[in-house]
Image (cartoon, rainbow, N blue to C red; front, side, top):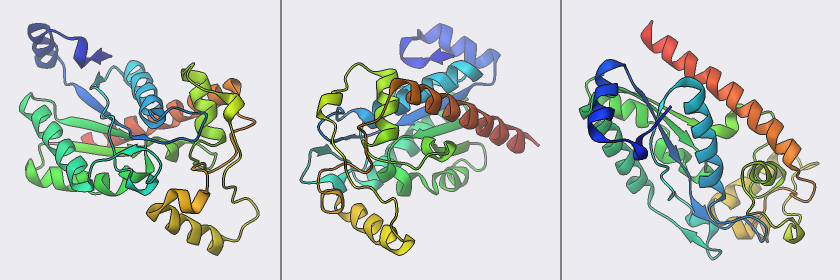
Length: 240
């Protein structure tokens, strides 16, 4: 792994000229995660995942984009950028990487609200670069068996694994959809996309109270294994 922010220009340019480099851009958010998790949770988790993936496969790791699209969490705390802004930033970063002769980029997403702006970014960038740039947007929670949550069991377990900044004594049960019909869940999900506080009441989707570091380690290992395989598949299919 080459962590780009620690590098010096001549050495970095030499390593790029000697080897075909693959870049990783982690994208998170700054938003409420209940009373027990920090507002940096999404960014913290995706940073750790991107770092481990980069270490495992020898990728070039870029600094995390800490801001995402989180307006749905208002009036709870959030620092948000528009969908068009996030897409523009990622487009500029990827084209800038191409100008430095880095032609393959993995965008690792850690926040649900970022899904829409990264969805067709690969197609847009192929067109802009005239097929010189290959971009793969991937959201980490698609590579685990457990249901995605927000400040619930999964995120809290992951944070217990990677951070000391967790206050389990303040953890409270949030919205739990177990036992609900699919139509009910779909209705709540639609509301959550507009107003997360209205859908969940306390800003938590799931129940974090039984989260453990051990569970977090298992979930993290599963994500790294499956996401790592996906990255290799993307590269193999692209080169064939």
